[in-house]
Length: 197
Image (cartoon, rainbow, N blue to C red; front, side, top):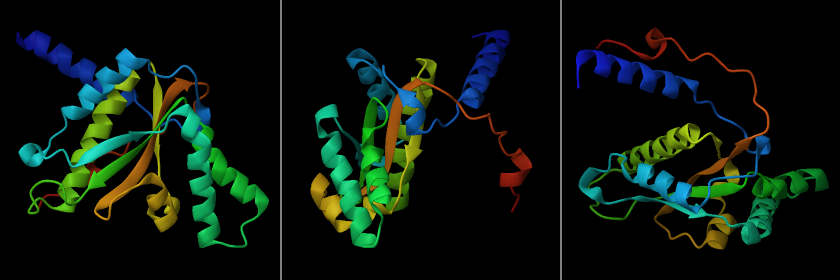
C-alpha cells in the first residue's frame, strides 16, 4: 500500500468511526439485519481482542416470539426492586423488550477458560466485540444502541434467562433501521481523556 493509499484509508476509517452515533431502541424500526448480514456482524465481533482465545462473551438473541417473555422479566425485576411501581412504570419496563427489530443481550462468563484472565479483561474483550459489531452495522446502514439497567442484575431476571453463577448480563444491544435521530453530540477533545504520567 502506498503512502497516499494508506492516508486515504486512515481518513475514511476515521470519518466512518466518527460518524457512528448511538440510536435509542425506540428510534429503531424494521427492517433489521437479515441472516447473511447477521453472520457478517458476528464474524466482525469474533475479531475482537481475546486473551488466550477463551471467548468469554456471547450474544443472547431474543427472537420475536420471546419478546413478551423478556418483557415479563423486566417487569418482575422492577417490582422486586420497587413493589410500589405504578402500572405505567411496569408497562414501560415490559415495553423495553418490544423495541428494535434485533435485540440481544451481551453475556460475559468470568469462569470460562483460564481463571488467571481477569473479569475486567473479559468485559473489555466483550466491549471490543460490540464495537466491531456496531461499526459494521453502521457500515450496513443500520443504527444501534446499548442499554443496561438494574434489571440485568436481578436474580429473577438472571434465572429467567438461564444464566449460570459465573455469567453476567452486561447490556442489551439493539439494531435496526433508524426512524429518527437526536442531534449529533460532539466527541470529547483528546486532552479531556489523556494524561502523561
